[in-house]
Length: 439
Ligand SMILES: *Cc1c(COP(=O)(O)O)cnc(C)c1O
Image 1 (tube, protein in one colour):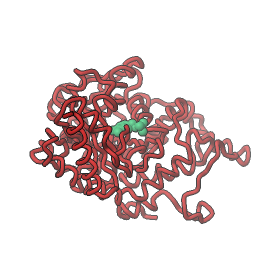
Image 2 (cartoon, helix red, strand yellow):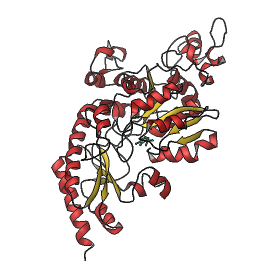
Image 3 (cartoon, protein in one colour):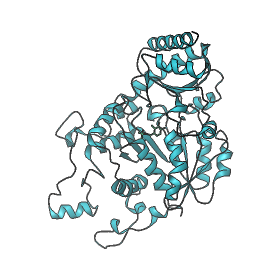
Image 4 (spheres, protein in one colour):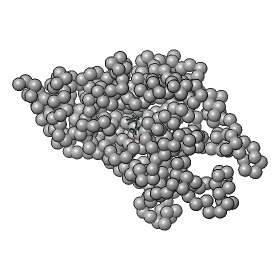
């Protein structure tokens, strides 16, 4: 199949799978196996010597998981992908594969709470240090924060939770001038809304748990690369150095990751080092569920975006709301960047300011009936949460201020219900919150 020429919606249901290679099964089969027969001693030698492609052990590769990997690589027009057990594993393996051995990661405080907290408190214990830019909205601020041992810039395409958008191309230019890659966590953007590689990303990470799975059933993560970054610049010796594992079977000459996997060296390294030895592998059944989600990605996201616009409009007019942080909101400072980078809409996850006291905010959250009160996003169902106390609760007051998370913040992730019902639900919850506390 000449996948490069096919459109996004065709690829999302077809890429990476040929039924003729799987007993003509129409649906992608679940290869529920830990290991694979080597067939013969000769074949086993070839597989372990990597002169023949094939499966050895599900920790480093599985045919069901491979369909998910190839499908997402196709959707992002990448050259390789590796799927892992969660979004956090995808972020961790990516950052460690860049900065292992004492490098630095440059980023912004506008990040998923877990990523932010891990960068601050856990990575430094492994010798990987982090710098936060002073002004996320100013690409020059990224430039001035790069040090000689900075190994990558990490940003989110649409930030969690406030849906802010950075000048992605300008930041990519800063990274590339310094010979370091730009990593984009495109979980909120999704491959449907945002073309990361076209705007300068070198590595994309996803929490597939969110919009890709889309039904709140399954944890997963994916790392995608496009094979364009020049890793041969001395900053990434672990990709350049020859390894015994990759020796040429005939001459015995040791070879590097870059030599053996020129098309997709980054994800090959993640697979052969981090997935193989840290072991956060995605299960075949979970890969199957994430493939199911991928097949309806466009339809779900476009409906969620149009629902979100209705809710944004409703909240902007409500006197119980002090502000709405979505690029489509009136006067939002990210409108121009949203138009440039997100022509199909800037997502369905955003925040608003609750105009009431703490007790009223609690009553409001307790009063919603349709919205589910929990810490996830990208579900088919609409979700609501008080981010400062939950998803970003690891951040102290100062860190929350730096990340732009005000105490009155409520985050919504809009699902596939009827927009009118969702608006009705918010309306009755506001009414209850403000009446109850009057008495
Ligand atoms: C949820 C999320 C993660 C972590 O993903 P898990 O699948 O929950 O481990 C990382 N980045 C962003 C932007 C997220 O929303």
